[in-house]
Length: 351
Length: 280
Image (tube, rainbow over all chains, first blue to last red; front, top):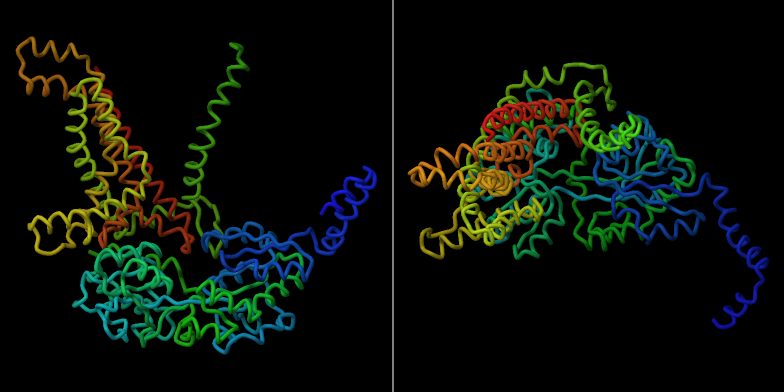
């Protein structure tokens, strides 16, 4: 320490300048090879953690800049605003893919540049919403479900069917998520419709009827993650259409002996995927990032530390309880969002 | 400083704020309301389709009318609660008066969301109200009837907007010269007569202003009904809200917002003209 300080102070100004210039030049040389420096990531919080960003930066000699989006809309707006030119890679869930592909904001992946794609567990091969013809536009990265959450005090054995959410015996003791698309998809699954994302008018009528029937039994709809937990804990709720598994620990923290179950009819699953922006400045580097995210260690970290299902490390999924990916219906872009919003509003406005 | 360019420069400086932060945003959503969405693009070709769609949709129109009714009820409750409070504060001696006023407007320093949660924890199943009622033996078991229905929307909105009602009523009472009240008493009028013929008419502009605050705030509030209204907490604000996000139908949302805005504006203008006729 003393020696280094001494030598630094011993530098002449000219020497210091020359030394400084050389030190600065080194990263610049590497950066020069990468167009305009930073590797730009647009994603949700938790998907670009130092655990895999740092090794990626070191390996490829780049600096990454991560932008977190607050909502699906914000993410789309950010991409559309620059036609993708502001970002190299993006992560979003399967339900948005059709929208991004239609708007030409993302590009098909060259899987030969993503050797780690071999790590993908069977449930995540050729996921339909990611495909357009023969082209695959994204690789699955993290997932979770919208399960049935229940109070063990009310149900000593786990309810095996969503029908508890339509049982008059549970009137005023159940709550549901206030979300147009998720409510309609779930009702369509329960009604046994083959494709819950492309409904006919007749099917819409049946879905609406089903949801109005449930509305009469609900204590309330809830708006957000914590809101659902708070209402559940404060109002003696028996069961709810949940926004996600992490609501269970939330309820336990409030003293409710809660658990979740994927009923026999199945449940909605969300699946976030990495994809390459149409406006990327470095296609190879973007693929390298996607590849880095499919490292098994990253998958294990997601499940162990972030409580998400992962797509590459089956053991990590098992030890964290994420064993039901095959029972989930991955969200897709529905036939007509406007129509779904209108139907949901009719349910909400029904007396 | 009095030269024309200097005055224009000052005017431009003063006008820039309101233009930038009030006129421009409102103008932009009015423009948006004439656009349409095709694919995932918003195309502005000055269409009236969004307005036609709204007025042709009975579900939305009915929701709008029910929301207006709800807001009228909130206004009425606000005035019925707020006027006696303002009057009571006004009657105190100068020292206690402002302390009391401060106490009643203190909730304004609290986040609006926090207030909704507070109302929930008062009215809920394990709430304060149920605890009192069960503790005092009035109820044998806690009841769900105080929350997640139309009644809880009214109570919550009225409580949240109360300071906005109290303040203008108090200010208009404060402006009544004391000697007018004394003169009325000197001329033999009892307290009741003085109130009816002097205090009430003179405080009417403030009362209208207070009611207007409650009405307009309630009209634009899409969170309270959602959070405390249960299955009946569906208002026009929710319909507008639902057009954003994944629905991505900003033009339709903007059109309904414009209808709401113009309606609120009309109410303000009418109420304002009534109030101005009552000036001393």
